[in-house]
Length: 361
Length: 224
Image 1 (tube, each protein chain N blue to C red):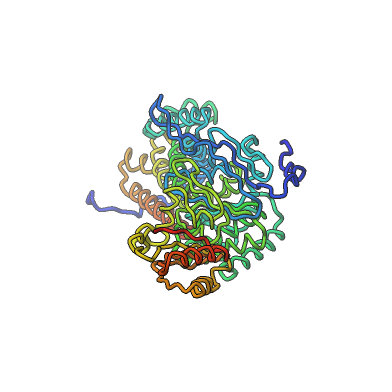
Image 2 (image 1 turned 30 degrees about the vertical axis):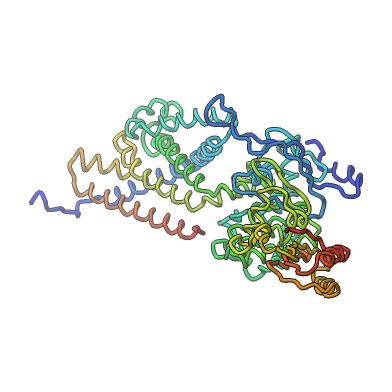
C-alpha cells in the first residue's frame, strides 16, 4: 500500500489559511434506469474550500444535492468527475485500503444516528477504535473520556433502543470523535430532533469545534442551524452553489432567491414582512429606512443618540435583534420624521457610527 | 383384541432409544454442517446481490440459480438422486453416515436464503456508518452484519433445524435410520401402529423443544 497517509504532514504550511477540505470541479451524475438517457445530474461542477477549524454549513432543499456533496467528502458517494482533497490527501485517487485508512480520520454523524443496535453505548463508541486495532486498555481510557465529554457516563451499558434521540446523537458524536478526526461531517444531524435537543446538540458541536479545533462540515435545511453555529455557509440549489460567504453577510444581505426563502422561513414569514411592504409609510417629511447592525454596536444606544442630537422623531416599524453564532446583529425598519436636511445629516451620522443604512422610501 | 385398542406393552424401548439417538445424531451433524456451508453462502448471496461489480453480479446469478434448483427439487427425490454420488464420495448411502450429505445439500441452500433475508433486514445506515469509519468488508461482515442480524439468524437456524427433523424422518424411506426409519419399517410396512405413534410423539417433543430453545434465544438477543 502506498504511504499516502503521511503526505499531509510533509505538505503542510504552504499557506497561512489553508483549506482542510478542497473540492474541485466535482460532478455527480446518477445513471438513469432507461438506456441512452442522460441520467440525473446531482452535482454540477462544485468548487468548495473549507478552512481548517471552521464550521461550514451547506443549506439546501431536499434534492438540491447537499447530501451527495457531503457524502462525497469521504467518498461514500463516488463523484463522476472532479477531485476531493481532505487534509492534503486526494481521496479520489486512493486505493480501497488507503481510502479506508483515511476514512478513519474523518468522523461522520447521521440524521438517524446509525448506531449498532446490538451493541451497548460503550461498545458503539469503542467500535471505530476496534476497527483500527487499538489495544483494549487504550480503548477503555478513550471511551471513558468520550462518555464524559458527551455526558453519557451513566448510560454506558444501555442499548441504543433504551436512549432518547438526543442521547443517541451524543453516542454518534462520541463514536465519530473516537479516532481523533480532523474533520467531522454532519449529515442532517439534528433534523430528527426536537428544537430543544437540536440546540443542545448544536452547542455540543460548537464546543467540540472550539476545544479540539475540529473542522466541521454540516448540511441542513434549517437556517437556524447555520445561524447558531456556522462561520461560513454555502447555499446549494439544483446541484450548484448559488451563494457562499460568511454567515453574517449571507444572512444580512442575501443575493439569491433561494437564500432569501430560507431566511424568510427561519423568521416565520407570516409575521415578518418584506422591507418593500413599508414603502407606503413614507410621506411628506418622513422617510422609511432599513438599518443593519452588526457586532457590538448592536447593543449600544446609537439610534437614540444620533436622532436625539439631530432633533428627529422616529417610529420602529419592524425589527429583529439577535445573534449569529457569537456576532450580535440587528435589522430595523424605521420611519424618520423631520425636515429633509436633518434627515440627511442623521443618516450619515448613523453610518459614521458603523451602522448600515438604506433608504427604502 | 380390538384392532383399535393400542397395547404399548410390546414396544421395544431400547430400539426407540437407539432410533432417537440416531435421529439426534443426524440432526446435530446436519444442522452443524448446514450452518457451516449455508452461512457463508447466505452472506455471499447478500453481498453479491447488492453489488455494482460485474463479477460479483455474475457470481450472484450463478449461485442464486444453483440454490433455486436445489430448493425446487423435493427432498425425497433429491435424496434418491444423490445416492450414487454419496456412495462414491462418502462410502455409504445408507444409515446415519449416508444420510447427512443429502440433508446438508438440501438444507444449506434453504438456510442460505434465510441468512440472506435476515442480512437484508440490517439497517443500511448502520452499514454505511461502518464504511464511513473505514471498516473493510470482513469487518462489516463480522462486526456489523452478523451481530446486527443475530436474532434473525437464530430464528432462521431454528426453522432450518425443524425442517431437518422432518427431512431425517423422510430419509427413513431409503434406509437412513432414526425415528423416521422406525416409523416406516414398523408402522408402514408391518403395520405396528404403536411403534409409529411412539416415534411421532418423540418427533413432536423434539420439534417443540427446538422451537422453544430457538424462541428463547431470539428473545434474549432482540435489541430493537
